[in-house]
Image (cartoon, rainbow, N blue to C red):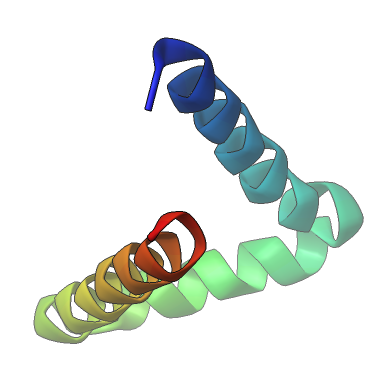
Amino acid sequence: MNWADFWAALALVLVLEGLIPFVSPRGYKNMVQQMAAMPDQMLRNVGLVLVIGGLLFLYLVRG
């Protein structure tokens, strides 16, 4: 991996993160409110599952 790949991946993350509030600002606000009401441990578990899923996907793609 070189720095260009890293910056391209970061740019893609920003694009994907920006799509939801751009397409559905009201839905995004509702989702954030629901997440704020979640217990910390549940939010940690969701984050862990996303990290593991992302690493697995990266491994499958970049092998």
